[in-house]
Length: 258
Length: 252
Image (cartoon, rainbow over all chains, first blue to last red; front, side, top):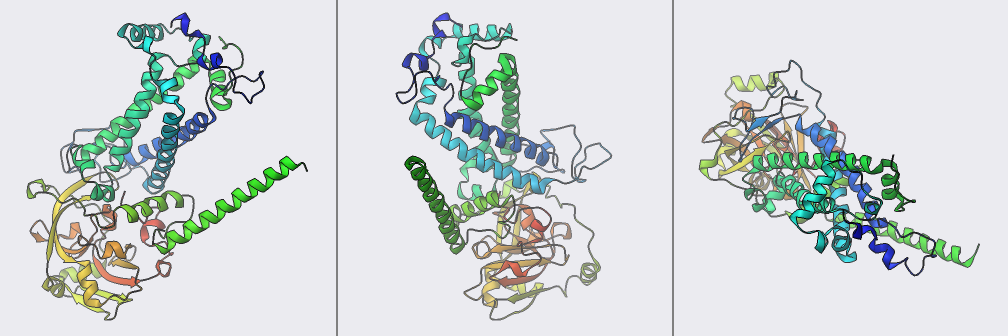
């Protein structure tokens, strides 16, 4: 990353008028921190319950029809919680769909409502524009390549990067917020016979109920990959300091290097 | 106590009180408008209530998707089910001639209907999808009599709020609100894909509630009970599903 970016915008602006001058500005606003952790919690619950529901039928199809009598698009080589499904395993896992479905939808509500607050606040406060939209000088293939190369060389982020996001981060966060999350919600709702009765296009545009389910699975896998890389990068950048910052909003001194 | 902290305390108290009052008013309104599902208690109550309330508010008159004849699945899966009981086998041996649908509860003319009687009512067909909560689905043509017609014949009373329906298997019963019960696509189905409804698919008589997942479409229906209070049935959670850990509302 260029050295010119080392002066964080927030520092240039100076502390808010009411704060004593010694108080460091917050790296992440209270709203970003709160919505981040609520989303993290609900996403984990969605992931666990989603996998639990998935094992009751680990087969995927395209179109409207799909069951154990029809050809599959693909199937996962895992045991199932239904004896109906031919898995090749000699045993059937216990049925956990009841609480999994309750948990899935309750967490979905929490995630969606939190997401709405975050997105609305993000537009109003300029969070997306200031923190996530790639800055003018960053938008080029060369800049993108430079960030990717530095990631591929496993270079630790500079202290400056504790104060702002690099191009790759900005692009992936924007992609998760404005592409993956909306898509996973849409494909989820497209599986609801009640929702699709009110809005049939929500499922026909996707090619049918089974197509919606298959896309839902792939988007969920993408979100899981994002989560793994995200946590991996946090670890790499200094797990304790980054966690502290996401919880308290404060950055204490220079980044730990170890 | 300083002025500042007292003011803060009063403010917090007022906010909390108005919050609780607001929640109370909202709950009261929701109850009046029938937005609270019978399994609204417990740790999953919030999500379940939000699901059901949005269904009631957003999809009151919507119709389940109907398909073209060409989209009917050639493989309408008959899901696995517990072994049929002796009562069923006895009726099956007699070609279901003695199958009876009892209608009781808040109706003016309680009574019993034979399959022949039900078939004599105007029949309707729909090509809709049966989708299981597990994830699989098929499209089929269902033929039957709209539940609303049978309820009309029996004369439902104005205070009725739910229809509880029972399978010949005593462990299997469910209920729907009046909005679903009177919905034009809610059938007592006796035919499928042009023929009689097979036993595997719930024959001779199956409830079809196409705006909800498959488990609401209970097989082998022998009784309807019209009521204003689901607490009178089973454990009071509205159906056998919540007693087994599944949601009462299955629209999602």
